[in-house]
Length: 479
Image (cartoon, rainbow, N blue to C red; front, top):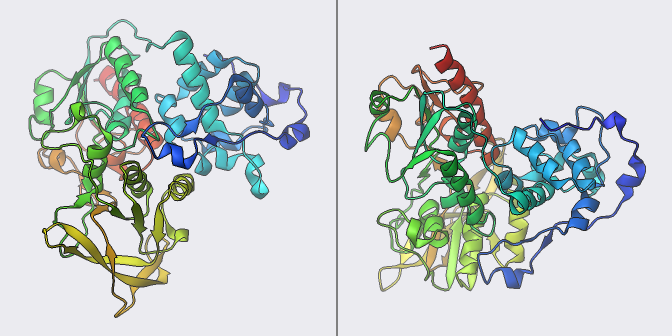
């Protein structure tokens, strides 16, 4: 285990560090980055990484950044190692507590987690750029020495993992290092789950995801693609095939619908289908889906979360001239990350707040031509704590649109639960699982990530998989 650096042993000038000025995250210019789907972030140089890490003042334990990180990464020690130029050791330190450091360093909402808890962020200061520094050392480590998952001698036990997304990855990576034979069943033609089929390349380059999959394959994990558990085979079948335990990590894959006339018109898309068809290589598209390249001149995206931002930014990259987000509350109530929203605006998207679509209008060719909307006002807070939107009568207006994307959230897919007797669910099909262990109502069956909690962060799904792996190991060893 990598040696951490106790903050009390550091001979540092905290005041001087707090006053150190460092370049922030550098992005490619908006007019350049909307011309492709490449990563928008300009990586650190070695010197910049060391300078950025040297701003850490090494707070006394417990450091706020460590507490705020769902992985509880030893961030202060990592910062010290980076400052000293020990990039490989810093990468090793991150791998001790995270199964997806290359991914989480890019897609976590750091301003809400580690960076947001940095004491240097108080009073509108600049926090230590913990996420970008993690990404830097992981890329450096991969380039300098590669990576292979430690694999001990096989213990003769088999575990089936359903879903090749973040939670399944976390579970598999931990069990693999305990000698288990792992088979991952994935309904789509490629692994990664949300990382491949939901997050655009400009936020998370697919090469990073596929390299992690390659790590798994080289370590001996078997992937079975185009196989939907609950339809092509059941959990009962998996036990009959000799698996000692099963982990369910299928996420929440069903787009929340919008009840409105004309929602089935050509040109109206659910967010999942839209992002898959605009962001995924045609070789990995699920059966029946073709690349979507012609969006017309005007695109509207309905919703306010990160998925809406992804759809807006993808539309701009595909050449749409006017891209607009329609959201029924105000900026203050939007659930997505502020960083993504800021980049979306920089790249040219518009926002219409207090706007509720009620009807999709066809043109002469039968395709979408416009969206009828109502103006809204905010009333008292609802169950989510946000103020409830209220329709303003006779405030109807039309927004012209060639393409509309519905990014309204996600529901669980009940295919597995309905095909598995005695598997308890809650809240419209989420699998009931113990938060600490992942145990479900069926012995030997575990679940984690969005399939159990509803839509959440990549890092929390990954950690749920890691927790379940520890419980699965205990269950099988004591069986």
